[in-house]
View (cartoon, one colour):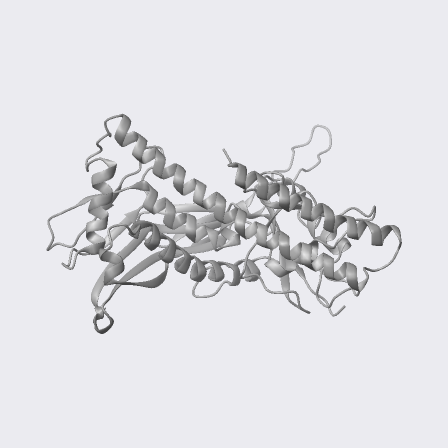
Length: 411
């Protein structure tokens, strides 16, 4: 349950939006543009909304971490911890932290996804020269994935994630043409029509990051090393993986911008390359109804592009952007959730700056898990310990008709 602080921030956000909306309503009723004073106030209110968004996210994240910590301590204090082949939660954390602070070569740490239907314990795998193995708590893997998703808007739009144990190339079956209804005269055989299938490939592209920590930071037992490493590695991998999925670069089999077609090209009014209300409506209806009405249907654009949506109104003078009334949920554009992705192109002539549709038809493959290795020699002269994180993954479309793009015109 959200705290009073989070609820207060949500109320402040809603009040700021209502005040900004009132400025737009006044100018619309008087059939004029915003005055310089109103424009300044509008910009200030939008800046306040952005700052509240950052503060609200920080508060919600902190509350989530506090809840997890409380649950761990309560379980240890109130009842005997369950054993699943590797020790209780406290000893598991100590094993993992020992790997992080040890100066001995204990090999690589593989944090892998297990059967989600069971209690998820990760296995600490060492090389042949080491004898120890232990379990890695689920929250460490979950934190890594959470931070990876946090920096990629595309991964927040509900793509279909495939976790595979091996990195061999796999094929996604795709329907290239569907069964169509046919007519037949009375008493005659009904013509047959079968769907046609094709296949798309998912490979295993490697993404990596280096995180360096000072020896003093590692030796300080009060520091949450697991949380820091998860945040640093997750965000670094997310930056590389996220931009590759959007742009189809670095060996990705099928990216967003290169994999789907343009549904709407902008008109000839307004800021060059920017979408107007009619463009957004046309883009929405360029996606066929089954995908347009799906629960996995999202708008995706860069932050600055989303900021421009706040000024747009429909033909009845109503804002088409709506602030979310639910803590942690996306805002809405034309009634559909709106997600920001820093890797989407900025508004410009010829730029594909907005995507809309059902992102569940985009398949993201993750191979095994995330592999960690440490080195005390890489930055020996600076007394830094280096951690390397490796992720293997790929992305490709199951149906390229599920999402359409808006392309800016020379307005």
